[in-house]
Figure 1 (cartoon, helix red, strand yellow):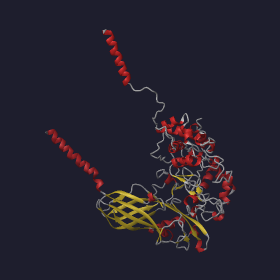
Figure 2 (cartoon, rainbow over the protein chains, first blue to last red):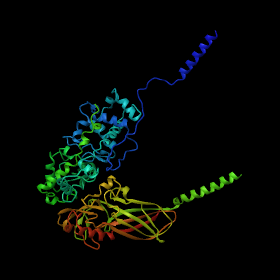
Figure 3 (cartoon, rainbow over the protein chains, first blue to last red):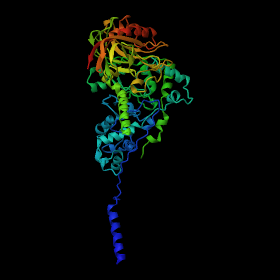
Figure 4 (cartoon, one colour):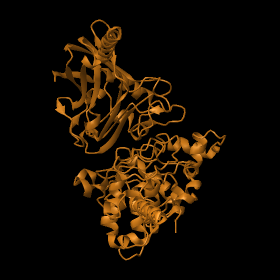
Length: 334
Length: 249
């Protein structure tokens, strides 16, 4: 009898322990965001990241998947990567601006019609460009879990899609061009005489490229009328500001990886860099909104010799970062 | 009892030290506002309507510049200095003011500053590598530093109807620093643990007229390597600024 009573007591203790033990039902969702460690060259400006969207390993992973997945498109026809191709410095023949170093941009698209942090342009892409059908993501076997891991919620919103894409885009840093290595990295790499002569044209008022395409980012992030047309056929930023004085102004693209980002200009009218250099040398046209920085407009351009054009082209080629276009961390995850 | 005395003494001492440490909080502050006009007119961007002494009507499209080594001078000789160079860009309101947050009591008789950067700062990476600063770089090989000022616009050449551009870009050229030193008297700035604002106004016409007549036609649209133009602007720059207003907040 004593033995039965003892067993009964033990059984009750076990039952009590089981009833008090935490539920062991496995939750497929875990939210434990890990801060993302950026690999930004020391010669770049500090990256300003909005407090409301800290970059995490999980957010970057999600953004990368969304970037390469056709799920953002309402009928799955294309993805961000359809127009922004890594081998072309995340630009393409569609004459889109390259998606590199956007973390330091505050104005987006050729007409600078979207301004603010990266989250602003990514929200534009989701809502206005793709017109994303969120149910495609919400009903997807993977995405609700990935959103939970990145943001702590399974409810997918346009804002969260934009945040994930912005986190991913901030990792697309291109800063190891030949010129970076020669100037900043102190590894004993030197430019050739031709490239140095080209730099003299670029960085003086002879060619005067640097006033718009200057600094470590090779863009001033402003809009300019660079004299493509005597009567600009498109309003550019003028349609955004509503001011006649902004008619025909377009955003300065970065010249990093410039040999990879043909065609050139906002309308893609030039197929080669030689054509672009010829334009700035002899083809600049005056118009009421021409930028004051187009200093030789009355002469039709800066008038470079054949040798000077060749030197300038050689210098432009030093702005290419081949490690960036082969970076495995930027390739498709699929 | 002895322990209590020690505790009280310690508390008093700590309080005194704390009070001394916080003494700076009892100082005043001065906000400097950098404003602009052209002759007697307020600055309006883009309109070709201002009269340069050389005879041209001109407009202002962009104006960006550095103020550095800013100091308020007290009558006893003490100088209160701004911590860092100040970047001013017309149209960007957050650059309009420079705050001196901790100005000791006393009567201040003058202020001084540099338009541009001194030689210790005007060198590669002399300023923090911000997007703002890298867009002001002066990258001419062998002369790397920063533009002191980018003042850009257009002009109607002698009323002919032919509109051309000018780019008054100042900076160090051929080892000449060319920065502009400014000193202005203050008449009644007495700090008594209070906050003041001082409005400084740059008359853009002064770049082109006092003491020398600067002619856009003479120097052309790009002057970065033009020593004569830089020297003239260096000399004209001394009379640009005036104290327009001072207010106790």
